[in-house]
Image (cartoon, rainbow, N blue to C red; front, side, top):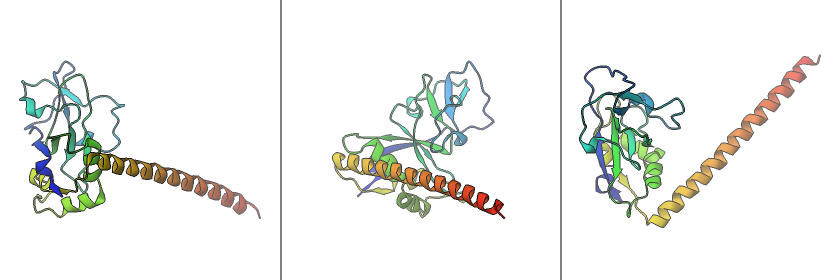
Length: 191
């Protein structure tokens, strides 16, 4: 087991003292809490575009970085989207970067932090505020089993197979329920 502080760096999102004002000619994209949820595919367009002074490099997200949603009942880790403009996140989001890809696969980190087990550890963390928000320390103190890279890849693949199977089963069950409902409606109409 390794604590995440040995494997990742975490930076709190930018603090905004007032409402964000969109600027179509802005030089920076900002991810907000409303943008950070599983399955967000950015089909509706990129996050808010603003004009901002030059940010120090550590605040900017890069390909391969993650966004950690530190507020709420679940604390999702999400891959950072990639856009042509520079991208940063706004607090209570945090940016996460793997320190050494020879030790930790991004897909494995993503899988592990989003498991119910890791989520329960985060919820039990003493590094919480009263508003269901985690402090950076809570994520950094999370323990992660660290198998070899091939085993990490195997675990992620097995999980993806199980998720695909589960989604097929749910679809089949919904289809059976619709068929049963149609049959029962037909049966109810017979007198």
